[in-house]
Length: 149
Image 1 (cartoon, helix red, strand yellow):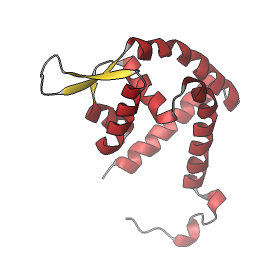
Image 2: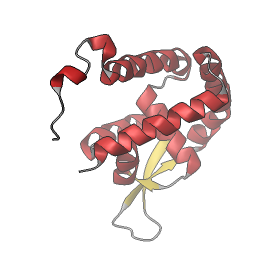
Image 3: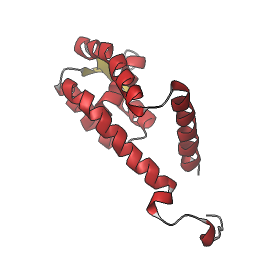
Image 4: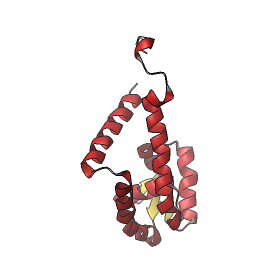
């Protein structure tokens, strides 16, 4: 931890960058929830499906790593998706000892609804696509800086 003058840093909640991120994260989750409820999905389930739509047949620990979740959190999420008939767990084609998460036809079919959800979310932000890309870049930069040892 570096030495920083404590008089030079914000101390009020609305001045802290973490406060803005925290409240925005909740707002994004709530906004997505109104669309995902119709599909019977939670936000973490939806994000997991988007990863599988990009690349089907992934290990639970790979999905957890990409989402920066613990495997112990990811496993019940995958089991719920499996119970909903959206994914199944199958032995790896390369190593039968390894289990992979695979989309079912029903899980693949949901992908057709994703662009409409994304479009509604973009519209709801009131931001341009360029502004959202700039924001995404800054958020990833912040995340990566915080993850470095």
